[in-house]
Length: 120
Image 1 (cartoon, helix red, strand yellow):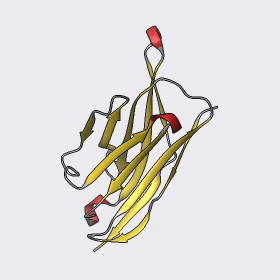
Image 2 (tube, rainbow, N blue to C red; image 1 turned 180 degrees about the horizontal axis):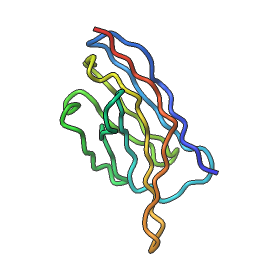
Image 3 (cartoon, rainbow, N blue to C red; image 1 turned 120 degrees about the vertical axis):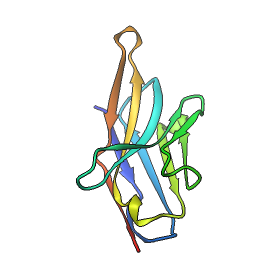
Image 4 (cartoon, rainbow, N blue to C red; image 1 turned 180 degrees about the vertical axis):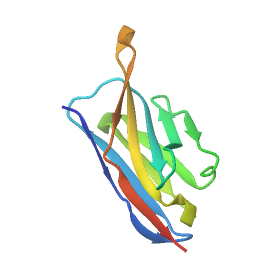
């Protein structure tokens, strides 16, 4: 059974940095897209960043220029380097692996979430 295990969340002051990691346990193949999403209290889950197997990245407008996503395909791991953190970045961060299932389509795996809190 595949599980996504996140690490690296915590409490940081505004202007600081954190690095999140998410690794897949179990056998997982054809991960087309890896990504990070976040959800603040009372808000909808929103895109933070995604990266394709070919290295193409996409970022939410609020994190462009501050966050960097990267992946290690061999280890099925995705990273999120977060710099210049702001209090509005406070949220639970979820990693996502989108797997291609051939003609069946695609399937999303989600991590359990890791809390990031930025104090002012």
